[in-house]
Length: 119
Image (cartoon, rainbow, N blue to C red; front, side, top):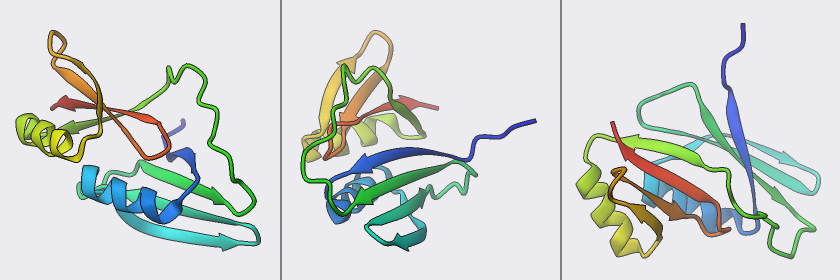
């Protein structure tokens, strides 16, 4: 038996990413590992789900990560889809919308796509 623990995203500017994830999705730091040449920060949601988002910052990394065609993504549900959409629209981070499916995507500072859908 297995249970999801976390997903990892590598980021260039850890502080910028932490601000984005808190403002856009309400994710906050749960714990941190400060290693030699790297920092790993685990983010959790206010619902206290067990699934975490791991952000990894590498000291020597200077160039943006190659996300390929960016076909992978994380998905988040929200109780107030319309309010979330307005917030993300004001932040300027909506990168794709599909009104027929009732979903949209936001892009984080490193270009990762995050799906937002109603519960």
